Image (cartoon, rainbow, N blue to C red; front, side, top):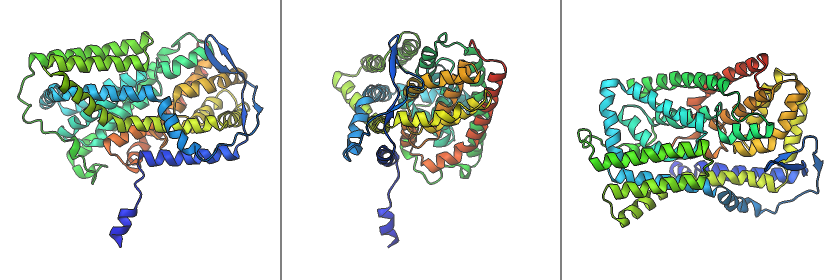
Length: 467
């Protein structure tokens, strides 16, 4: 009887969770009155006109909207999904050439000399920069299995690997000095100089990363000392365990070194392209497709081997990519059901009654709640900034402080919301149950929220500008 019950037990993985949230949001559209803000286009950016909310005829979605949300979300997220799959295909080619394995082996050989904790710290610094300066989240997906294998080989666990890479990346995004996805759009709407106030956010980014370094290294040290301290006990991690003993003493061939240089050059080009050249997701996909093809050619693969590698890698990236698309379906249901604007209008009214010190903290909480429904930072910035900026002027706080409050509320909770496609994607790859993730991260989140609130109070006190 017990065995039968175990077989019938539903596993609440990312896809089940997202579908249940889509169903919940569908029922929200049935009970919340429809309404909308008037919008205008300024310099090519569609913005909300403050105090323009008005009721509209009630929109009732048919039950099939629950299932329509899935392909609609996939279509809306297609470019991001293809980037994930392209990079995964590229990485697979480099794996098959043994260039990746030999690179990891080289790092492992340095672990004895420099110490595994130093390597772990360098990993965190790298991902802190990717999230903190570029605002990359989904784009780092293909590197996660490599980081997991490296951490396991150094004596840590899967949780350590995800914390040092994905978690550091996502949290660094929350105080990014230069993310085009949140800061860039917000500054455009607020008519602030692009990426102004950089120094204050940079200081906060450094503080966040120092705290995360201590937090992750403390956990990693305990796991390495005694495996019973691992939160991941009982979870099979065999698929990530690679025997590097055969390649540990092997040197890279000239071809492998050259191919890795091509990959590194592509990575640098992608960073420059996104940060200063206005590259789209399709541009990123093309860059890594090029890197994969060149990596195969340099390492002596024939065309069929390159194609097979790309297809195999893309298959591995399909699951995480689908999570991104499915999560976007939540936003589609709320938008099509005409209930996003009524929700925004309802929660913005109480904020107008608060003072300059309490407002940014309250805004952080409000944005944190919104993040469970609209996980896209750029979408929230476009929808909410036209309302939040006049609110900042009304209560006597700088627009820069309001944008920082928005950033923190949006970014920190990316690591908490079970509706976050990005979080679920990383947990799906690493096979980390949601409850174990919360067990690991909740103390860190409390610390970072306290630091954030202190930073917001300081921002108000110093009149964080330029205005």
